[in-house]
Image (tube, rainbow, N blue to C red; front, side):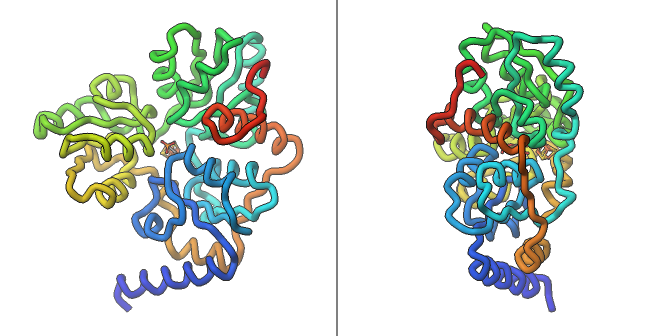
Length: 319
Ligand code: 13P
Ligand code: SF4
């Protein structure tokens, strides 16, 4: 069987199983093309958390990395959440531990802890509120009673927030995304010199010198929005390469350049059609957060969604 036929058959199998299981397939923007093609909902981390709250199905198949599936489970305790590949983690999320965070909180007893959703359920439970790359600035600004913010785990996103919220002191953590730091300022400038008309869009997980030469800094969903609204015809995209497929599909008349071939997140790419079919067939791998961690991480996520206009009644002040 040729590759296309094999892929078509797998796709049919996934769609059939999806119906039988009453499942919804939620897909992050960095997933492989074949996975983006079977998405019921695709988007950035914020959009996917919001979609998880609204999901109207018994089963959520989360095509992304583990912290995203964990968030879906925390927000949907009555649903079965499947992560097709158990090993699909996020190395940045592993750069903070509960013990080290507790020590940091002792060092700064008057600070609120804001945690990027790229973190484990245990870390979310230890934090006052979550944020994503699209709402990090507004989340920090919403913490009116706090002058000091412990921001975990991404130091680049933390620095970006600090530059935009100068009246607060952001205490940075030594975490970073091993994929986004692969692109250099020199690579961006080289491609800009070749295409001077192209607009540079960067994800805030990139290094600060990359952000400094960028025209617009935003989450993956922010990139879609920006490109759609822009009169420009070409764009340099400084984020994980999976974005290119969706951007080209949504904007066939526009041109996109990647500054380097190295912008590939290995764990985001682990999910394949075969694994999604396997997940639905065997109802694996079920992600379930329970107990105290579930209760506390739920509060942190709901506070974020409340500031972002999705949930109501979650307390923000006096966190
Ligand atoms: P967003 O899709 O929220 O921009 O997140 C990027 C990311 O690195 C997720 O792992
Ligand atoms: Fe984690 Fe970076 Fe991969 Fe996102 S792109 S999952 S932050 S390693």
